[in-house]
Length: 428
Image (cartoon, rainbow, N blue to C red):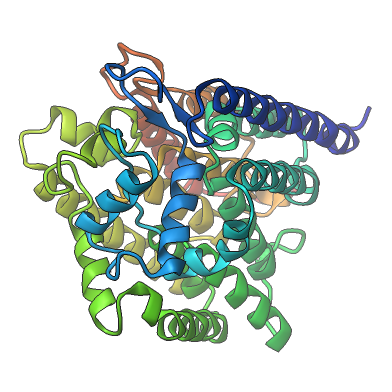
């Protein structure tokens, strides 16, 4: 069977595995709720001496409900976030901070009208559909050979993918949005920038607005639009974010006070400043970024580590952007290098965001196919990808003290940089 046809058929495998994961987890959480009487997504409610675990989606939905209720009045302060957790789970030993933007609060509003269990199920089904869409409409058409298919499968069916479905994180949907943005910007078949008319600019700006639920991911996606000189799309996204922020100010603590609260929350979103109650909610040992490694093994304080990573991330992203704007870096290489640079250096990146790498492995090589050097290192690329999206400190193995996922992402970065700057062979 031809590889592209096979890749299209495999979309059913992706859909089936995603559905089984969502339905199985929902059934388990519903059974736990029925047995313990705890809120949906909370474990060990009836055991006073045991730690309480809270699944990501239910706790974020709890925050969103409080935001819309206007209680407490300044929800982006850490004290308010602790109060929101305790109002939901009075005997919680720790909580998970909520650093999503007002865009996320707005988009999640319909979910607050539903019971938590039903909202979780619908969210999971939406993620399953989104993953199938990514495979069928983005990955499969770009798979050109068997190595490409293996890379796509290795990146898709991973711990990052399944953990996102289980805990209800947002990385699958943000991956869909970034795939859509890049498909609008880059003509894969012709290997050239696609001119954005008004409709395309509105669509790209709208997708960036959706990604703005997570400011750090939005900045990474914004660099893609910046590199493509998509000024109008950037303006559309900025206008939508500004309108949302102003309209929602009453439930965020009032303008401009909530902005100061939010900036302080993001600035103190590290192990040193986040506070004893929230600190266990973002353990550094499960991160796969440089910050997670430095917080465990580095000599500096968490605040300093975060500042260093911030400078490296933004500085490197600006450099890549400058190279593509001056045509010293091919757009396809810019896309993949921007993504992996973000996953390595951004101080506010979840380990589940590693699923973004699945978009990078099928992106065209540095040169058009007729002059592209034959890629002989795809087995090494596949091995690095498997480690990057499956291995993290503490999950699934407790003794991974050498940050294998981070090392693998550095390996991918070096491999892709080397591949980008190899000279093309003349056409035959």
